[in-house]
Length: 211
Image 1: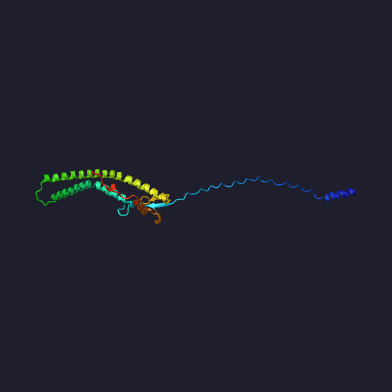
Image 2: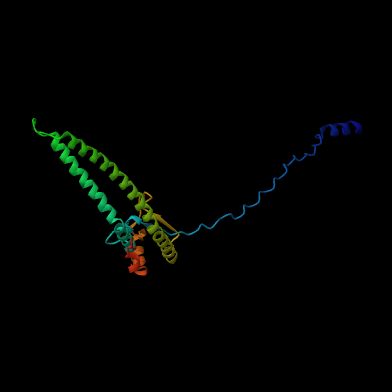
C-alpha cells in the first residue's frame, strides 16, 4: 500500500526543467579612432587689377613712357621723312604715267620717256619697300633697347607698391579678360601717380643722342 502511494506521487511530479544555455555573444568590434584634426589654414590673399595699356596714355599715363616714345620717334624722324619723300615721288610718277596713258588719241607721246618713267617708278617702289623694312627693323631694335630698362623699373616699382599695401596678386586686365572686377580693386591710377612722383622725367631721358 505504501509502495503504491509512493509510486503515484512520483508519477505526479513534473519533469525537471533543463538549465538554459546562454546564447553565444558576438565579439565586439573595437571602435575606430577619432580622425585627427586635418584642418589647414588657408592663406589670406588680396587681389588687385591694373590696366597697363593706360601707362602709355599721353596725358594721364606714365610720364617716362611718353618721354621714351618721344625720344624714339625723334631718333627716326629723319629716316621717316626720307621714306615719306620717296613715297611722294612715287605718287608723282604714277600720276605722270597715268596722264600719258590716258592722253587723247593722236597726242604725240614719247614712248621712250614713258618707259623710263615706268622703270623709275618700279625701282622707286622697290627701294621704298626695302628702306621701309630696314627702318622698321631698326626701329623695333631701338624700341626694345629703350623700353626694356623702363619696363624692368616699372615692374620693380609695382612689386614694391603691392607689398606696401598687402596685395598678393595683381592681374593685368589689359592682357587677361575679366568677367567682373569692382572699381575698388583697380590700382592703375594710384600706381601711375605714385610712379610719376617718385620717378620724374629728367633731361637725360628726353635727350636724343647725337647721330
